[in-house]
Length: 327
Image 1: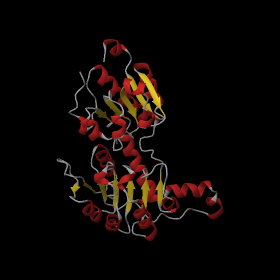
Image 2: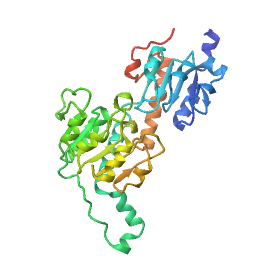
Image 3: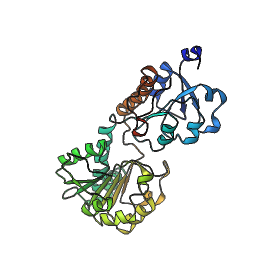
């Protein structure tokens, strides 16, 4: 790259729609290049030549990375980055960043709200009121389930898992967890296997990341182990759940209820889950407040600014920690 080219604003590719606040900041600090989606077939010769960074909601595969020979950094908007091929990026010397911490408390709040909504059927009780049934038919039925006496298991004791656990402590509920390895210093009961955790609790909260290691980890065997009084909540990634097995477990009474904020093929939700009366379903709103999304947008762009200004990332993902800036 010549000195004249280096003096030009850095070109940042933004595939598809993106956060308005982030776009405003990108436009002020860089040259934004937009394409409809992250498709190598949409990469022009000019894009191939000039783009050095990507700001995205994920969805960057190896082919897209290879289509951009001057790519240096992928700034992912969100803590989950399983739809970015970070391993391939590392091999190509491309930094990948995400937005941890700034959404932790918001997602933990949503998790507790979803759990209570699921157990106490507040989604159905509100519909009862809005439909006029309180006037026409009287009080809504007593909820069959309660948080009282429950034992909660957390699958994925990372930042968000810890924030959820702190909130659950205030409810006076015992907590257990499963990770690939024990987290030192935690007072909670650790289970070396997911099935062992499911057998020990009656409320399972999934905050595990996506990816091959957790693909359909919540399957028929795990749901059966959770039991007929079981409540399952997923705030992590839809790919961690065998949705057909979950729908069957809800229908036949293998578990009592489920609260879901994420799905395997968003925004497409399986009809069997939509029709299940014992589900509370949200459209992936875990971190969806103006306050938190703005903080996520700032961190996403701050990573780009730090990389091209100070030649270092703020929040690199583990796979690309060793990636060095190009000379």
